[in-house]
Structures are given as C-alpha cells and as structure tokens.
Image (cartoon, rainbow, N blue to C red; front, side, top):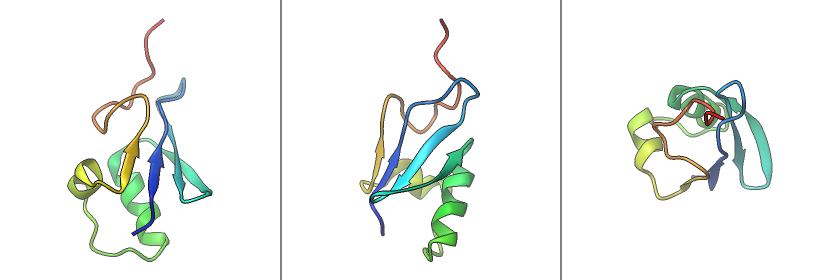
Length: 71
C-alpha cells in the first residue's frame, strides 16, 4: 500500500492527496481517496480503512474534516 498524505482542507473543502512523492488529486470525501487508491491498483479498500489506516497521514485535520477552517 502506498504511503498516503492528506493535506488540510483548502478554501473549497477539498484536500490535496499525495501517494509517495506523487500528487494524485483533490479529495472531497473519503470515497475520493478510495477511488485514487483503486486507480493506483489497490483493490478492496473501503472508506473506513482509509480513515483508520496507519499508512495514511492526515495533516491539519483528521478524516472527518472536509470543510476549510472558519476565519
């Protein structure tokens, strides 16, 4: 499984996602990250797996946060 880094929410609520050294896209839900993993060849991964996996690093906010911080 690739090392996954999920960055803090942007102004639109999307979170940049990186696999290893490669940026793979903007995720707006856990399902988006599952889709990125599927496209990268990882099958059978569920949103619950992404939320609790030790191979996912959540930066700035955990897996339940998809809205930008309020100013």
